[in-house]
Length: 345
Image (cartoon, rainbow, N blue to C red; front, side, top):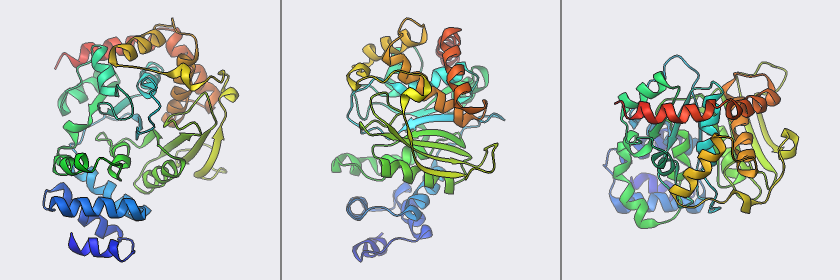
């Protein structure tokens, strides 16, 4: 690691293969903790280059426990967290709505980062067994069309760097890598970031590493989601587009919620709490009893998830499919089926 630390100290970027080798040493546990700490802080101070992040992503994927999502074009909805907004689990609810509309969803997640309740916490409160290994996840994907991939079980090599990350207590590039390293190898993703610049980086990294359709978002009110309370920056890469006259990559478009037929609402209307509180919010959205801002923000994010799935023509169709997923009871049925299937293995 010393040669890579010297490169960083000299103010130079690591080449892609150098980044891969540095990451490999960390994932294998071959790097001394003090060298890992210096590496992470050096890059944080200087700012990571795209080729460095691409190299890190490639190696983290190599060390992950892979999941077979079958022949389907599985999607994922995942964010970096770290927005400190205290919202309920929007992407988790949107994942269930997207699954109810027919998308296969490999939901990659963890316990809480930016709130009192992460995706793993709320699903657990809703009766889903989250501690499934490879076979259990593949069973849920095959039987239900949605599964939860609990990140610590699928990235065991991360144990070598977790003590350093905890000791540092600051955001590093590992916070960005999680959403980029879905063990099911999904090529279609809605990803959220804690800043617009990081959202753009994530889109570029996913484009560079083989993704077919990516929407990376960050809202001006700070969410790593598509927001109701402020415009949302959208960075999109789509090699699966039907209209090839459009560029594959589009940077910095802005999503205005009212364009998609949902009402703008203050961020306070989207506040969550502990896992029991968030479970109640999600259940009320899925069973149709919630008709206000929490439902609307889930519909909006589910529409963009369905957009990357490629199952529908245009965002209007995606929005209508999200509405129907809730209205028909399909989204709630997906939750019930996932809970049941997760306990079958």
